[in-house]
Length: 141
Image (cartoon, helix red, strand yellow):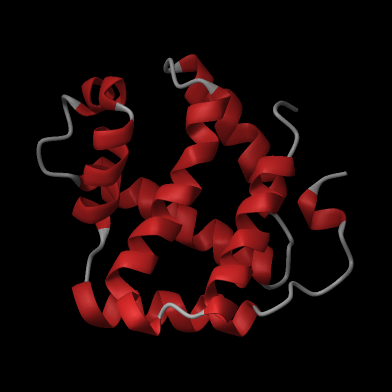
């Protein structure tokens, strides 16, 4: 089943939204932090960004991830479909589906690190539910 077809509201959407607001408040643009984490865990992925000297592509991609998260925890009108399409698009660039799925975890880990003691058990539970949903999304259209 596609994520967007689930009629139930996402539990603790307000917790994820609040954690993203704190992230933005504390670091402004988290793009360098998220991609540093990605490249440390998946060094082969850095080569895919060799022409992104300004970081604009990385910033745009992260913005889409945040938009996808907000749609999934909100209206759920397109997030699941975008995940399927982007997994396929990224595979064409040489990004395995398993690596694609790890990016949302990189975002969550960055939020956790930035929030520090403000990352609560409730925050962890909300993000874990979101990450489980992303992992359960179909691998292709």
